[in-house]
Image: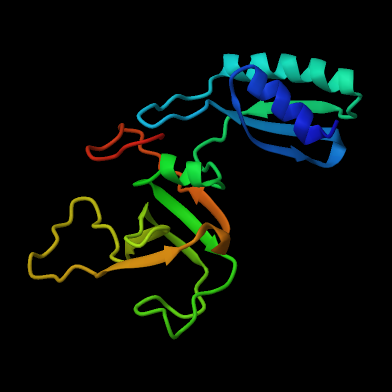
Length: 188
């Protein structure tokens, strides 16, 4: 049985979701797991979950004769990769970093700079189906400084995309040591 199949079977058998599996130099086998997602639910993987999966994987890999020196099981983290339609549904409304396979051309770019491939913005559903990213290039106000009421806000830019146009998509790591601000949802 292939390594991917062995890992998926062991992880899903314990009630978790296999996010990623990676082999590194020196015999390191890195497995990333998460709790299965249903709309309206947000759970987080903890150390005990990783320990339980590690024990099961060690046994399964030994039975299948998979060669590795060290096994590492972890959660997806703050900058979790988004790969499937389900991932995008789960994190709709969150801040996301996208990298496109091909740069945005000058003809259809509008306000977006030509040849740009990397974007950060809020993930949302596009009106005609598919997904969109919206952002404003206005810098954040510095603490203690007043913002003039006369100042015109920067326009909100929107980029529509299909999942097959993406090279990579990840949650943007947002760390706020004072707690989540009103209006924010999802994982921290």
